[in-house]
Length: 392
Image (cartoon, rainbow, N blue to C red):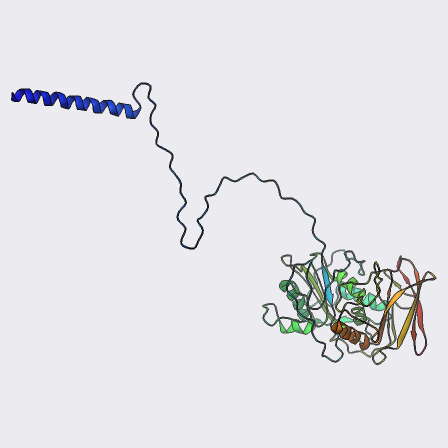
């Protein structure tokens, strides 16, 4: 009986092992007609984000993108401002928020300058960058040509002031500002730069702008030209800076204030009798806005100037202008008639004009090239008249 039970258990154990082997063959895929079982693909899950943060995204395969569309650059902006203070108390222009180059309104000025001003400087073949110790420069040479058209002596570069003016030009492009002062908190502020800041400045969103464009702009500016042709001016200093990363990519600075040490001989006429001057448009980005009180025209010509001298402000009462024998209208600016965009601009503008007894006629259109021009300013002492020509 015992042997029989042992035999039965042996048979059952062998059958169990045989069944286990068959199931192994089935699962392994070795059974005929049965494919091997493949493990499922692993599931990728993003890790949990920490509290308060969004869960990171699983990056998708990069898509092939079309090349970016090439867009035309927006119109560049050029800005310039004047700060003339015979008594040393001209209030600063109100500050404005920083804006894009196309919208920038400087703390001392704000309109777009002509896009293609005519050059006043003969382009040098290979002009080196203006250095702090340079005694001659394209800007100085161009300034002296402007003064020669007014019958004035040349000015020289004051080497000791050059580094400060270069520093203020660098401040303007690094800070993207257009102003006659420097922020004490700026890392680009310097005492020497602050000293040069009250002079002329010109900033542009164009990287290629330089002394030629700046001088052309100033000559077309009713509140910049009088300082260029001041007969008391004997020494100047200048600075040029560029910064391709900023909104303002170029800046030119000209100190025309500290060098007023000469004995001025008035009157001064620009362009002077018998002189030939380029035909330019009036600058449209000055502060104060010289055109604010003038009738609106398509484009005004650059100013024709008469400087009677300090203490003779308001003597001019009228002006007549004839081009090739034909009468041409003009807007007259004097210390007693100028009206700015607001009370502050009117006060500062009249101060600039009174400083040299200036009267400026802005023709109702740019003077044609190669034209003969006759101008006559009416004063209580009689007319001051002369003739000049525009360059062909």
